[in-house]
Length: 352
Image 1 (cartoon, rainbow, N blue to C red):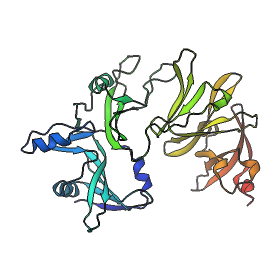
Image 2: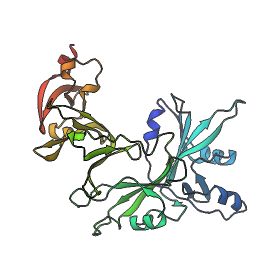
Image 3: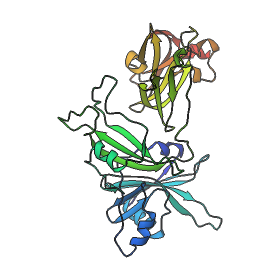
């Protein structure tokens, strides 16, 4: 028996990241039709073929309604209403297209599955090396299996591929994890643990926020190559690049210590909580200050985002601590050279 739930906010659904995708060529009586709709962004789950940007047939929609838990999200702002179909094997999100005659249709926006395979045969268990070989013409824009010191990351990492010439924002995401005992320096033998395919709406995959004023050094730049991930890097004299930090989230500059040079404020999601990571140059060295870890707070944010805060507190960092009774106490901290010093409670800064 399926369950239908109403979601209050439509904006949150674009952040849902599933695990895995796939696709294949149909060999049924409808093989010609299936072949026509097969693309890099298609997925084959069991006997059914699904493609991003494909309109659901009445038969397929009925099948999904019967076999899946369904979440419905009402239209909000620029986003249309949507259905999110989920079961043990896959998840599919669709836009609901309202027609003038009152008959609606649905177009697939997001697909993920743990049991399917991509159009080129990549599925769970394949390695990053095999993924790259299967998609040699696609551009890779985010993800890393190693940290700045070349050490393997413990967490699963995402690699995103897209076709630079198809005039869409569709993408393939492959999530990978290290195989125990695997020692490849570049993570090429990491195994695929999840794949998803989606249409990134009207967001430009090359959203460029590059600036020459990061830390006051015109060799250091910041960009969002996919509109979702911030990448901070140094441009070397020989034309190569040295990555400083890459993370899912946005970043902005602010002169937190009033020395005339902006520090970089990274807005990172940490286990579902907001977290500020400050990147600064101190005595010629780049340092990072993870506020949640440094203070042991539940979440943190940049006080300059608080509309009614007194002007003298705008360059502070807000940190909230769970009191254990369901209430959080917020304090403001001054930042300088990697150090955080408590200044006052948030109420005082708001004049409450």
